[in-house]
Image (cartoon, rainbow, N blue to C red; front, side, top):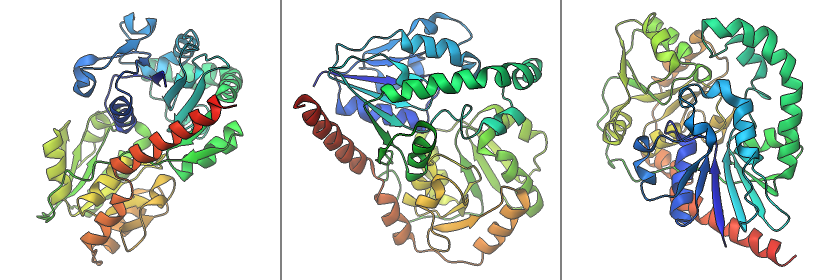
Length: 370
């Protein structure tokens, strides 16, 4: 197979980018097309043929992803990848818009249909991430005027995809709801081999990840302000500055941490706090692979790995008070590390690689024989 990989952008490393790293290992000769690229942030792709679009030359693109959805759509649509046998798009935005011909199999590994068009449109209008100068214009003029056209464009391009792979049952339901397409669930790759087999539990809870608005760090800060318990927050993002202003001294902001520090934090934490409604959520499963239970909002992807009272605790209102009550209940329970690690092993990287490589080969064989 002559394979090409497409990803929305490569400017910040997160869960979606780990899918790209594994795709690169599976298909090392495949070029990676993306809207914008910051090479020094991706040592995993040092030997990869990464080809950013013309957007990469614009200075503001790499720091203001939310502002360029239409230019990014145009940039991907300008890519004609019909010379490839198989195109695999790793997509939560517009990378699936690339053009392919009748002899190309386009498999979209979908992290979610575009949140700010579909599932989270109303929430983004109430919590715009653009900064004070643009928020009013975006939420009262631009989005209401353009959303119909943007949704129609996104829906049309989704119909051009040959096959959808969803990163969770949660996203599978969204693909069906918004794109009217069936999909196959293959969970994203989780590194479960990074943690010691014996935990050295210390007196703190932890949050790790990019802290953008929908991750709901505000819920955790409100809860731990009330609880007075220690909370360590690892990661950067727009919400860090806001929450530092209201957080009490028992909440520590660590910034970005190394892989080793990340592993240590998860191995030592009393529990992992997870307040968003996430598409899937890779870091909570990492926590479980370290033997660390998860306290999660009981909607979205968390329902696919957090079993209340077994691998963690669920709370059902996205409020600080609901999280307070969940943490108090959590502290009365005991958890079996072996059960946690066994559940996490179901999502191991090796499982992802085997399932996706088998799927791609099988579907290509069927496509070629048509």
